[in-house]
Length: 333
Image 1 (cartoon, one colour):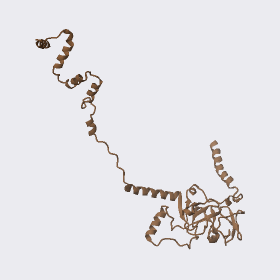
Image 2 (cartoon, rainbow, N blue to C red; image 1 turned 90 degrees about the horizontal axis):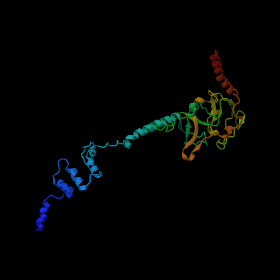
Image 3 (cartoon, helix red, strand yellow; image 1 turned 180 degrees about the vertical axis):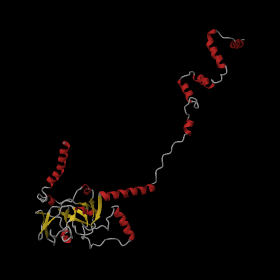
Image 4 (cartoon, helix red, strand yellow; image 1 turned 135 degrees about the horizontal axis):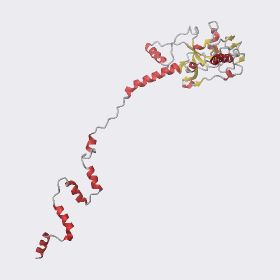
């Protein structure tokens, strides 16, 4: 009997106090409506429709709300980085730039020269390479007393000097190319290197064994080759150096065909300032001979400056002032 009672009660309606439970049981027994299956079952499993469930619904679609899916991102192609040129393709460009820079530097700034003789010993030795400043002459700078300068043959100084060139045509071609861009001294150019002793307006002389005098002031020349006298074997003067020209001598006075030996030529042994290529300022090669070439202190003596042109600054000032005064007078009219 007890079993029958219990079975009968399970099929009968329950009291009103348990209505909420009956409703839920009935709803759970009904099949899910179309379109609510996925979300309803998840809600039933979690027990709540909380934020986690909402987030799952938003992110789980296949782009239903317009946002791209992970599969779309994978399908997009990433741009490849640009390919770098190989070293061998860039090498000719780098060499070309280097040659252009070397040519510009040689033409306007610094040029290397080789010492072919012993006329400047012991300041400069045979085979030394010196660097010559070519920039300052572009701005009007002129040689000063004591400078070691490279200059072009003013005419007849190197008439008997043979041109030193290799007998191999290939070597000559390489030498010509390298000398053109300034990486090697030229064998064709007839250039000389000496020390400036006097400039335009100076009076220079050397009697007996010396010393050399400039404007009556004796020079102390410690740079002269040991055993030489200041005049060497060719006393001279007094010589008045024309304006715009210089008087030059080698430091090896016994082995230098300098201004002393060309007084019978046009200019009286002096060199035009326009022939000066530049001032040698350093011995760059070989490393063992590396040295700077400063102006010796003897050329800083008081009274050495020429008194032959004492009115040059006032005359130059007047030459500038007169046109200005004339212009001001006309503008007032």
